[in-house]
Image (cartoon, rainbow, N blue to C red; front, top):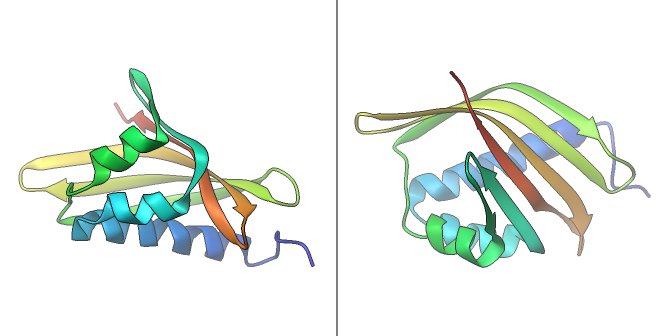
Length: 122
């Protein structure tokens, strides 16, 4: 049985919500310790953040709320896909609006984050 199924978009959107929910609770570091591949990275405007640094940065960070929209899944083979979407997150007066792309690989019986990229919306 292949890991890529017709419900792949729902699976990846659900996984992404789990990550955002964890960050909103303040335990994003714990969540992504389990969810990221050993060589996973996060790409932001001016740097590439290695897995351990990304996990440390997410630990204790939180958002009050978030909204995801404009989802699109690009299939990259039997065991990989990228979820592209728009997010708007709020923390006090701070508003975070980005287009995001998370590349997942099916590994160890579950979808895991290999690369997550954030692009500022201007």
